[in-house]
Amino acid sequence: MRRGLAAALVVVGGLTGCTSTGGAAGPASAGAVRGGTLHVLSTLDLEHLDPARAYVTSTQDVGRLVYRTLTTFAAAPGPAGGVVVPDLATDTGRPSDGAKTWTFTLKAGVKYEDGRPITSADVKYGVERTFAPELPEGPPYGRLWLAGGGAYHGPYQDPGGLASIETPNDRTVVFHLNRPVADFGSAVSLPMFAPVPKDKDTGVSYDSRPFSSGPYKIASFEPKKRLTLTRNTAWDPATDSVRKGLPDQVVIDLNLDSAVVDQRLVAGQGEDADAVAMEPIGPASVARVVNDPEVKQRLVTGESINTRFLSVNTRRVPDLRVRQAIAYALDKDALRTTRGGPIAGQLATTLLPPTLPGSAAEDPYPSPDGKGDPAKAKALLAEAGQATGLTLTLDTVASAGGKAQGEAVQAALARAGITVKINEISSSAFYSTVGNTAQEHDLVIDGWTPDWPGASTYLPILFDGRLITPEGNNNRAQYDSKPVEAELDRLAAVGDPAAAQAGYGELAKRIMQDAPVVPFLWDKAAVLVGPNVAGAYGHTAFVGRLDLVSLGLRK
Image (cartoon, rainbow, N blue to C red; front, top):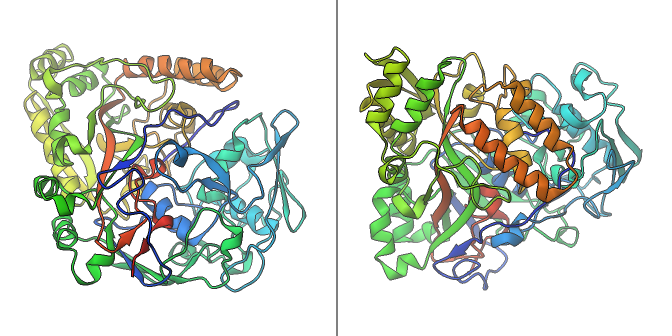
């Protein structure tokens, strides 16, 4: 999930490549044929399918099977996957007026599932829906950047629409911004820029049945159980250079037990030969998989630009010394072990992962081997008048992995005298809950992937106190620092990308002095695929998990 205030940004490289034990682009990426049913086995639920509300990487990965945006990420492993390319639009946008006006032309022949053409009015309406209070969880770029966005409340309250989005004809859409945004062409890769036909909009209920503009349409959706996608025969691959659309059907089973998913894919029998996992293998399966040459060949490992961290609600934990004590006490190695050990990534010491330009090396709260420093933590708690300890509540996902991470935090902080109560939240409601400032507790198992490569969609979203909202809040630390906000504004106006990147790296150090979060892992994702699956690679935009649009079957 993400947010940003950048004003003069660029798409940058420097990403770590996504590789596989079976080859640079995944095991036997050639050989897929059109047809068959691809099965996706997920331990999580899908929080939102509505493009106005889809702001979690797993949902975005699934979403681009169903709907298209003006631009999108390339379908490729490694740094190439971080490149934004045209999707519905003919190019990545044409800026004018000093990058305050952006014009996009829709490709000819792009259609919805019922065969009607996608129009610029549909793109405009799709963006306007993101302003509706009823749909609060999506990105904030519309209200931040579009002229007049601060006073607009969406088409349900104001059907007249937003004047700063113009549609001079059916294939042209023009966005008028309130500031220069050099990489607006990257921003329009987000689901909030997917088209929505007004006559198909069902408000909050649209979440269960978005109207397809991609290669697949929704045949059925049982939340917490199964999403079945069937071929959208109106989709024309000649208009789409990203999506392969190979399987006839994609069936995504939800809320499965992680151990069961691993067992099924290790065996790879029956329909599981045509299956992939949505999430990385569980820690209990790592040894078995890496020590079996045949199974190891089906393990696809992708790196990412994601950092996982523990958010500390600064409004509920206002004493800096207590937050610093938490940072020293946290056992990062134990948290990584719950995700599979070193195969899951590198222990994090900074907010910005080293794969992001501008990331500056530091370790402000060190401990031996990342296992925590209870003595240092106890000393800080004593200084804070908490020598007898305190009790905090941790929000985590109600899954085997979420529980294991919660228990790792609980055990680590207990050594310092902090009692942690674990509050498990369904994966289908997790970010909606912790994004509600009244419902969020003291600590949150959290993480962040930038909307596109660069710190400009990382630090502003997570740490600008002006962006804290009652619902759909991404600043789970509820961190509010006027000096930090002033520096974010300054960096947003820096025209030199290298200087801006270096500035964000230094600002990340400044933020960590206040300990609003405790980074613990720079992600990798090791994902199993079935023997008949081709085209598998980890994608940097989806936390190293598989890029679903490229998968096919060999039969």
